[in-house]
Image (cartoon, rainbow over all chains, first blue to last red; front, side, top):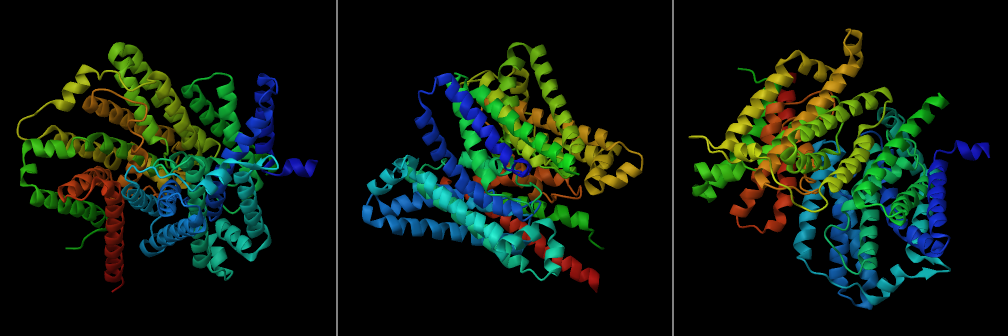
Amino acid sequence: MKALFAKPWIWSFVAAVSVWLATIGVTGGASTVGLSQAALTFAAFSVLVGIGQMFVITLGPGNIDLSVPATMALAGTVALKYMDGQNGLVLHGLIIAIFIGGGVGTLNYALIKALRIPPIIATLSMSFVVQSAAIWTNRGLRIKPPQVLADFTTSTSLGIPNIALVALLMSAVAWVLLHRTPYGRWIMAIGQSLPAARMAGIAVDGNRFVTYLFCAILAAICGYLLACFSGGAALNMGSEYLLMSIAVVVIGGTAVAGGDSNVPGIWGASLFMFLVVSMLNTYGVGAGVRLIMTGVIIITVILLASGRKDAIR
Amino acid sequence: MRISTDMLRIAVPVASLLLLLAGVFYLQPRAMSYNGLNLLFNLAVPIALATIAQMLIMAVNDLDLSMGTFVSFVACVAATYLHDTPILGVLVLLGAIATYAALGVIIYLRDLPSIVVTLGMSFVWGGLAVLILPAPGGTAPEWARAVMISKPPLVPMAIIASVLLAVFAHLLIMRSSLGVLIRGVGGNQRSVQRAGWSVIAARASAYALAACFAVAAGICLVGLTTSADANIALRYTLLSIAGVILGGGEFTGGRISPVGAVIGALTLTLAGSFLSFLRISPDWQIGAQGGILIIVLAVRLLLNRLESKGGAR
């Protein structure tokens, strides 16, 4: 029990469960299943982009991928446009989305490496270009996703939303990558000290490149699924995931300074962020108060997290 | 004559601005008039103010992800309270500036990541803006409107405002002892502390000054648009960071250039117009800003390489 409470990610789950209880307490348990399924679905999208962002943040201070929303928009738009509502092209669409993610990730790291600019600025410049490409291909079109995909993303298996199952699978892969492969050790080492990692003979450039690639591909997959889930790609569909992807990583107990990450916390934080919004909605609070509460919660969490670090010392 | 690093730092942004301006004039000679210049640079004034604000935060090695929502919040306050009940409006804005100063202190005392704290604050400012102005509207204070549309003889208002801002910011940050202190905190916090200065006071004043410039940005923006909206300035977060970097500033070490930051903001604004004069579809406007950012950084890297080669000889 004590070991469990020492985990950095446990608090995001404690928070998520208490908000969940507070919400169904008000509704009298009437919408428990609906609320839980909705929470799992929407959390799954945050988890997908959050995992990618987490790997990038692991690399150390200054490493953040700001091109996530633009990548989501471009991948969603192009994939839907190619599939054009035909069920037979579902896999092709997914492969296109992954290629777009791969392209953006490669260019991101090419900029970081070739121009030696901080990752924030490199991914920011890249996101401007990618966003423009998305606007250019989208042209206000709203193409319906193939029926198979629309059904898949909006339905459940054994009571659990399919999207959540996909995110769970990706989380498992991410956990294995982070904790059970040399790659995970390497990026943690890079995040803790880049010069030390380099001296220890770790291929710093290769590992950083793979990480940015991974993050962009996850964002692209998320964009593909989100476009199908919401019945069409929209240019602004990724915009809320820029701040969300950073917030869930931090609230989930991953060190912002890098070098110390965990996967489960992203789930707790994503569920928490969605449940807070639905709790405040249930209480009939307006949009303004809801935003303020979200901000206050993020700041409180980071204050508490810093206090915990002091206690350990 | 030996070219110093500082001069080189400012040379690239100046050259890129002049090049863009020459391009615009070549494509559309009519822009070379009083009204033409005013229209080209009108919207650059609030962006330049926000860029100076972001630069002050970056001078102490932090980053403000809430700049856009804060300017939007100020715009909403300016279009409502500041217009209807000026005293209350001034009090609200002073409170906001005090909040910024407090944030600077808290981030330092608890050793928090500024990115996450300002991320949280961006939700708070956004929520407050929605509460103040749930739907677009409000009225700009008459004096703000009068200043922004005034037509001084010979030189357009937008140019005068930009030059005044550049000179004022230069004197304040590069020439005053407070400015030196703030940049010193960014350069080496410990040595500033050992020299007997209060790091808390320096950080608080850096954040408060940044808030003052951001408040000015919001009021200017409302003066131009005559009414406000809770999402009016969301782009400013990324634009202000890009402007600082474009103008020769860096993320760490207190290495900043106020004149460069103003020029960076003007360049980013001009990039959009340049493209529309080229008759390239407006879809690519954001992309052009990204492209220009990449090109300028590439040129700067090249110049730095040449310089270090020259130094080694």
